Length: 428
Image (cartoon, rainbow, N blue to C red; front, side, top):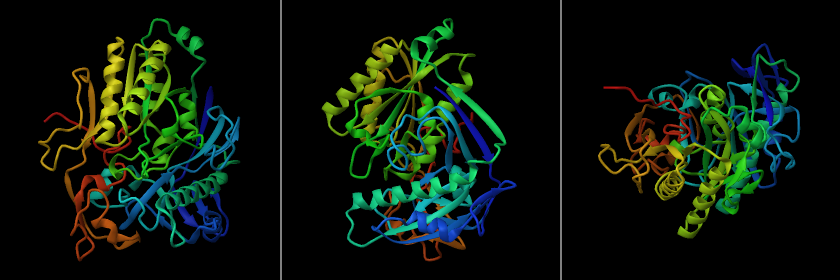
């Protein structure tokens, strides 16, 4: 599949009479966006805000972040299985409002929703302090079950992103990137002298608001499968989870997976990037055995010499990570793991809930248990009182002055396990 991504650079976002892109500014008709976002009988109210880099603004609790995009040519549309039909995506032309994002917030549902600060020390830990954010505060009607509450807000965010993305359909892109992965036999033969590298993309699927969707299907119900990387980049996978904010893969993270981008950057030079395998992270041992067996079989079937494996979440999913690693390594295929750590506030505890002698090449994206203090902000969008109960917070996290003292895991993207974050390592 060959996908062209047209990047329309957004340097500012403002409210206006018409939703459009003009000279790099995204103008948003506030009332129209609120109406489209709230087009669901289960929604009681929608409010729209803007949050820009450098402002003293806090968004809490953050549910999802979504990049506005529009299909210009090729099969399918945005968010297949939700907003558009289930035609295959990953080819043709997609225009992107690069630098803009839709952020959803509202009453808390999963206790593992997070924080975005647009300035101050918290802003240094999240990539979404640097985006021009259109924040939709969506509150469902009273009495909804938690799972229905999450679904309603998720779909509202997709409607908002699709609406804004349409503003870029007829705009000339500032730059165009081309990504292509060919059918497997053709792809393997294109660079016969380079090592063949595949990517195993672990999706959190534990239920209880820990869900990911593939073409609209809850991924806990799929078997691991081969997928074109361009499908991932074109919205085939979206977030539906309330896993800890720091290593949650937002929909924006799926759309802009840096591992996939880096693999394409090295393709044909250092290695032959032959494709992706998506796999789930279920709860029971039998489900974990089944999925890890299938994952190892698929990368062997592809003929991979090496594999990068990224995790989502921590604790229970650590077992899936280690099982994938061990079974793939036993087939003679080298693995590199990407994971966060939960090593205690002092960093002295065991980082993962499971381990393996085969896991000898691991990239850490940071320790989510570190304590951070976020200063008060002039503007708070959402419900600041949830700071005491979101994952990483504790009784007394929210200070009387509006400051928040909590573990790093409260910040969206702080230790994202795709590397879609701001932390790095350096020699001491």
